[in-house]
Image (cartoon, rainbow, N blue to C red; front, top):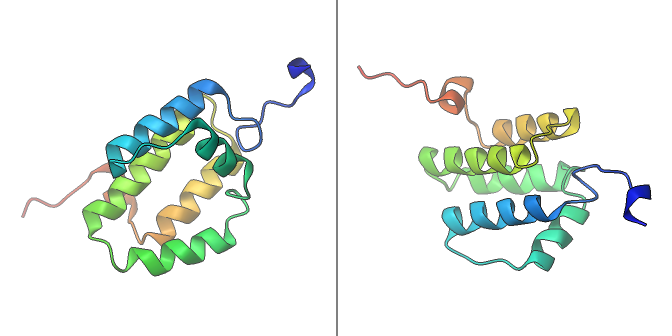
Length: 114
């Protein structure tokens, strides 16, 4: 049964996580995704991130800084959705933020007003 399955966010996404991911995607993209779309993405090699990072790097150059920041904040919301953040998720987030060419100051909302 389900009690025998490991509870890792990257392989067994729970319904709360699915709903949070769907909500974040809806707010940030305006698109509705099905539960199955999100589960397939979660089951994929998203955390084996080299191809994804290359894609993000090529896409980031076309995005405005505020859009790159919006992507990072959305990803952070998804990672924190189950109130349990793994080291692997932190590494993944850091890699994505780096590929988005976001500075630590941008990530925490520290901006010069001068």
